[in-house]
Amino acid sequence: MTLNALPPHQGGAEQLARLLAQSLLAGHWQPGDVFPRELDIGAHFNVSRNQVRNALTSLTAAGLLERTAGRGTLVREIGDWHLLDPLMSEWMTGLVNLDPQLVKAIYAFRFSAEPVVAGLAAQAAQAEDIERLESAFTGMEKTASSVEARAEHAEYDVAFHDATYRASHNLVWRQMGHLLRPSIMALIHRSQDRTDTLDDSLTRHRQVLDAIRSRNASAAETAAREVLRRTAIDLGIVS
Amino acid sequence: MTLNALPPHQGGAEQLARLLAQSLLAGHWQPGDVFPRELDIGAHFNVSRNQVRNALTSLTAAGLLERTAGRGTLVREIGDWHLLDPLMSEWMTGLVNLDPQLVKAIYAFRFSAEPVVAGLAAQAAQAEDIERLESAFTGMEKTASSVEARAEHAEYDVAFHDATYRASHNLVWRQMGHLLRPSIMALIHRSQDRTDTLDDSLTRHRQVLDAIRSRNASAAETAAREVLRRTAIDLGIVS
DNA sequence: CTTGTCTAAATGTCAGACATTTACTAGACT
DNA sequence: AGTCTAGTAAATGTCTGACATTTAGACAAG
Image (tube, rainbow over all chains, first blue to last red):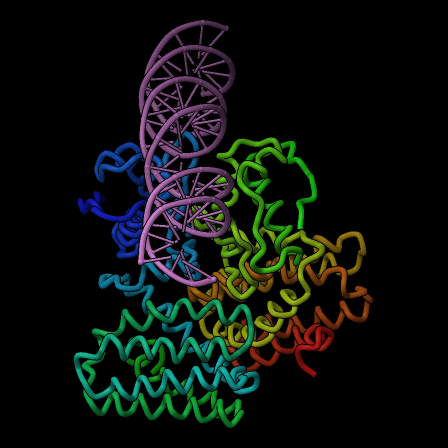
């Protein structure tokens, strides 16, 4: 595998890190492949060795690469990736070629986890949590009709689910909210955003909101499951 | 807050990172506090500025610190910590003074999540997963009676739960296995390891194993809940 | 066939100078 | 007095070159 030449004309090591990471996340590179040497990368993108090292440090911290002193840099297998590192979420977001295996795995996780989270949220939500949920939901409503506001709608969608995780008032669950943006963005092109589909989605989101507001945990669980069910079926996660 | 002088006589920046991280994880330092400057840390521990920068880079990646160019290094609040970063797990493990708030949050997460994971495991487990579970369980049995094998027993305990996460065959759930070691280690001193308690624990673990082996998802869920229930009650997570 | 040594090549580390960002201070001007 | 501006100090960020350390492989001696 070689690198697609794309010199980052602005910004520093973060640009480079994103570039390299996305090359890995797209599914090019086999586990065990040797990654280019620092000096080669630096020469290729015309950046200093420092920048390269900083970028590679990030990728290593994310579990994408493994570096040893005299050997070089090796590509790690997908099972070792730190999918919950916020940097990973940032890299995954906006990547159109995200590995389908990853999209499916993340969605399968959400399908199994979010009902539980919604149930916890129904038990633990405070007034400000309800406000966040309502605000996100009304944003979804406003942007549902127009087609050009699709990106904005997705942002409100992310905000809604993130508010659910936060409402659980658990530090660990809250961290998983980072997975939402890449998961939702990866599927944005998938749904034909037919009007009836969107109406249906809105209705189900509203049921989650209502269940949390009325502190009905089991209702929140089933409602959250219904929100995700259609896409889960499409992805072959559940029948 | 000042640093407890403890010059790491061996190893490089990782030792320093662990030291600094544990100082934060123990709950000293208030959010917003200014962290010592690079040069001061270097002078204090007699290491080069490079080592300090490498260590601080790790802590920053873990969400413990926030660094800006001319301002300095600030301590971030607990809600921003990346609890799922494997480095964090490593730092938390073996830390006796772990913030009780953290211990409780992690255990509350496990109490809500592991039943689901066990259910998935019952659906997705392969032969090798069953083997891992059995191996870990027999290890727990062997080390249950003697008191001096308490640490070894805890390792088998970790291995058992980790095998459950792996058996779910979901990349995201698998990552959460990293939380197990600090969670279990933090509670090792808590239980008086009375014999009847240990017997009870073994019985419940066996029920999880049997349920997964017989592919009974709902039985696995309830069994996993029972494994965690007693400690959850002790911690005040559930009544 | 094993062992030891040498060499090349890669990442890791150091030290110093310099760049950049930020907060603060002191004036100058209205 | 108040406000804008310039300047200064202090912190993190970056660059560069040299050197250290680790690894894999080649090659020869036993």
